[in-house]
Amino acid sequence: MDNPGFEDKLLSRLGKLDPDQVQSYVTRVLSQRQFLLKIFDHLDEGIIVTDRELTLLFMNRRARTMMGWPRNRSVLGEPIDERLDPAHPLHECLGSLRGRLRAIDGFECSYGRDRVLSLSTLPMRSAGSGEFGDEEPEELLIILLHDITERKEREFEQARAKRLASLATLTSGIAHEIKNPLNALNIHAQLLHAEVRSARAEGRSPDLDKTERAVDVMLEELHRMGRTIEEFLQAARPRSPQLESRDLRPVLESARRIYDPECEERGVQFDLRVDPDLPPVMIDEHLMLQVLRNLLSNALDAMKVRAEQARETNEHYVPRLSVEARLAGDAVKLTITDNGTGIPEEMIEKISEPFFTTKFGGSGLGLMVVYRIIAEHRGALDVETHPGEGTRFTISLPLHIRPVRLLESGKDRFQPPEIRIVDPSLVGDRSGQT
Image 1 (cartoon, rainbow, N blue to C red):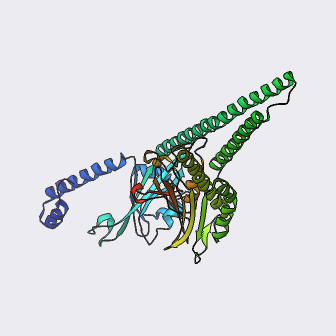
Image 2: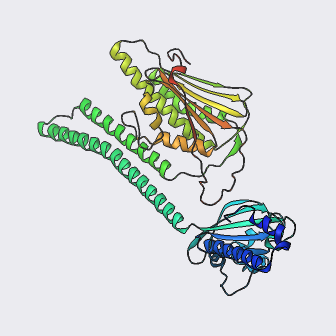
Image 3: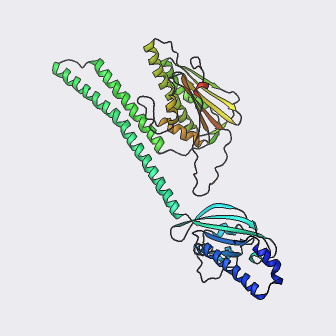
């Protein structure tokens, strides 16, 4: 209405008006009503108004189409859920609102042929004075229907394109990571072949030092290729975690047994500290061991590079690796600290991306797997690093995991891990850490 208060003025003066004035006012009201109805009927959204018992009071043309009611079928004045076919996807949803109106935001369902409908509701109170036939203010429900088929199709295509792009990245990455060791294997196989042919032609035994060096390189490249394939399979075909209340100690001890021989060989001081009062935590033991193996392997690689740098500069360097598990509020903190090379500040934001790596011979898949597993445990990961001094990864695992809530259609069912990058200046001196 373009004249606020027009209806009130009309009602207050109704008994004083002559027939011509009444006719003029009625004509004006009907004209405005038709104007508003025409606007509602030209909207792409369906609009329905019901009372508390879901009795249909108003609906526009688009809503009638979406509900599957022909134009010649009279439905106003009847309960909407009783007029709906029980097989209609909105029947149960709307029926649940009878007598207890509430707001719904974005309930999605299919309708018609390959169409997707989004329903939202908004409770309101009428103004009374005969609006929609009522004399007293009453509760009403506005139902908004929106066809989101095109939007869903766009989202599907975008998701499909993203999956294809990820697949292309994985494919090119794995091809690159396998091609390099294959080239090295080919070169050293040719060297071995040439040495054997030369020794046979000269009537001598093959040079054992040269043969051993070639075999060592080939074994190293085969190990690298196998590790890349294993990490690729972990990233491409992750298994669902089987979370159970478990003591972390056996997992930590298992990781230590795996890496103790390598630490001893390299002269790495490996310190494991576990809070004696550490409570059980919800984990998948196999996946958590996988996380530890990835992080410990990275730490050892970083310290190996640091040791090589120290030898070149005659620097005194003692590689130190520590793993600590402690209770912190309602979570268990698991910290892996090394005094290796650290991670350059400009690279730290990219460490969870597939195939991003800062080390020679690395696939870049290990940390991506770590981030995914921590997310599946509803945990968080802190990264503290100082280039040239070391890195600390802190995993926070909640003691109690809430059941996963079913989200509304169209929303992500999986949230990425919380990644907190700590100011490198807060890490402090790593040279004496244990």
